[in-house]
Image (cartoon, rainbow, N blue to C red; front, side, top):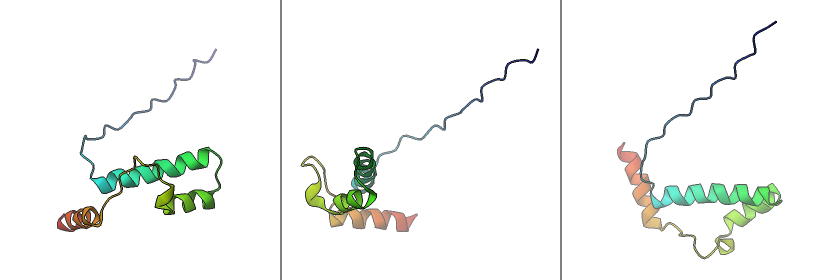
Length: 79
């Protein structure tokens, strides 16, 4: 009689706790917004159109300003 196979162990990487900039938060939100639109039945084109149209965003979404974007780009250039 053969021994039962062991289940493979899945290890999770520990992510470091870091603070996200407003631009990071907005990008993550856009990704989640797209995924939720796709899950709810929107086609890829319709979901992309809704993401590209800020008027479709809920009121509670914080839009990054141009200064936030410039500061984020400047921080990346320094690294």
